[in-house]
Picture 1 (cartoon, one colour):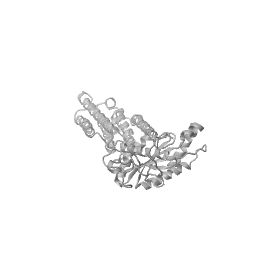
Picture 2 (cartoon, one colour):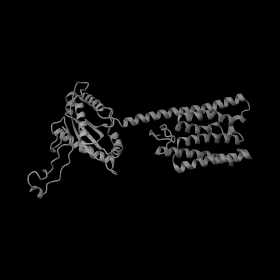
Picture 3 (tube, helix red, strand yellow):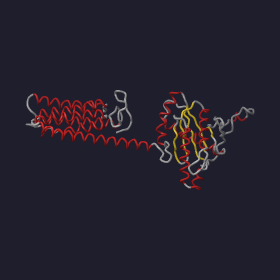
Picture 4 (cartoon, helix red, strand yellow):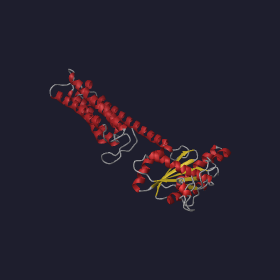
Length: 403
């Protein structure tokens, strides 16, 4: 089942294996429960149609009512395609009760209503319910077995042995399913964590950056803030690999990642998107705030030494955007990162180990503009605005140098 935390009716988060109120996994679980209820109700109706299985009189009508209750309980699950914890717990107890009724209404409970029938609610309880809810079912199981088998074993000792054997096996099976579920949940959590983390540095990866974008854009719109993207590229990193080996390069990346992780704000997301390129995504009030953070990151990199004693610097590009309603957060994220990436290359061309802010090109000059007095015309075609980040440097775009 999904490891997403969904609120239960009491406002608390159910366990990852519990049924919730949404998601394809929860829909599938609700449908599974509906199928089991329909199967139990249909089996009860079949027993009614067979001669010599169900007792005559009141027992027959009681048996029919129990079968009908199972069929009716499946209807909401089929219509709504969801089930909550309390609803699931109630269905489990309904299954226990239906078994007891079936056993009391049949001529030979050992033959036509064996305790093995309780395996279905036992598995459901172990897989979907919380531990304390499962504990309730584990207590109910031997009671149900005792009531169902009481008339089939007149001796108290023989009855106790049979109840102990059947209830013990059922409860052990439920506990085994619970252990299996917990193990699967841990594996799912670990797998999800690995899928969102860079294995070398332990930082967030490209997937986590994309997953975080919608939340960041929503927060920016609510708070009236800007989203800032900072692209960091380590200067001359290829030389570290070529001269000292890839082990030294990996040590540099790990050291830089640790330094940056200690520098960024708790609300910012630091991700490694490939090679020696990293991205910081966060919310800022203005370009000055983004510039101060970028400078802190630059100083953190330059002051870092790897386990082998190697040091590098970083060129950082900064770009900001004002999120608007209706835009696709993922597309907006990559547009913003592309602008920060362009500013990063500008910082490299300006001498490396510096911060540059993205400045969009101004419109090309018109013939009328060219004849305006000096100081009143538009800038030359392709020229970039001066960087808006205090203490940063910029220069006109030139062919990119990947290092």
